[in-house]
Length: 362
Image 1: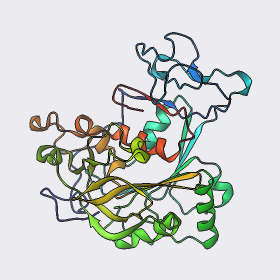
Image 2: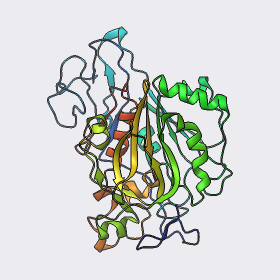
Image 3: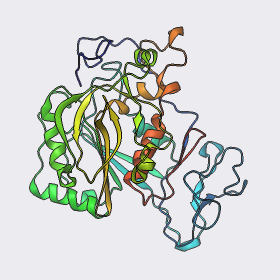
Image 4: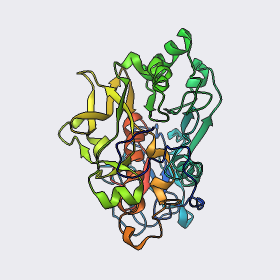
């Protein structure tokens, strides 16, 4: 979203040229082992072809978010070694793929305007889940029927417009709003984003869908704060660094977090029964979660966490600058951890959702 509060040029400026081509997305150090729903009582997920015992911390494998190696534990296998993840409870153990939908248009003004796709999360999930997680993208206006919603465990709300920067903004019928609310309250998880444009009209469609939770966006701009000038300059972003570590209800949302990039987005109206997981510019909420019925709602102020440059550094003007060594997104930001936390909190029933890698904390 456009802002003049940054000490470096706004990458949402449409006149800014693309300085680098984006390199192919890669996240070699992390492998998503999957989002599995293990339905059998006492059944766990285990490496199929043997090897290290669950919970022993053997090379290349790890228990993440589990409580040990006993029944019901969760084991992540490194698919790069040809292993798969399965349930060990026999025919009664069901492990269907975890399904996530991204609804809305992608952002247009990343750190490398016009050359910074917002597909890093989707690429990561689809390419590194050993076939156990599936992400679908719906960039055209899609009717939110009960049948459509029932296909998904988590829905991410992106730019809800024909053009995420210019509109026109989508509107949803009363039936769609009711269906979406019912889907969440029956166990669905929603993650909403904002900051796709300087036009305040962007909040109308997303507020239509999430207002049942009591959390909404307003048109105020939140630009974030810069916790480290060198990092902010090299990453083309301010940062979120103030995490609420005192509220047990949102412990999963802040686990393992230090920094993520934040450019500018919308202010969040957080009711008293919601949980503010992160703030910026002092006490302004930028990440808010709330349980509604059997489901979960997560509202985030910005869309900067979707861009590939903020995962890999690809396309950033300073990517090859020696002065930026140690200050690039892949070195300073916990993007994989951030999205792991959001997905796990939004859908706690995905008990086998795992990521192998020492930087991911369950």
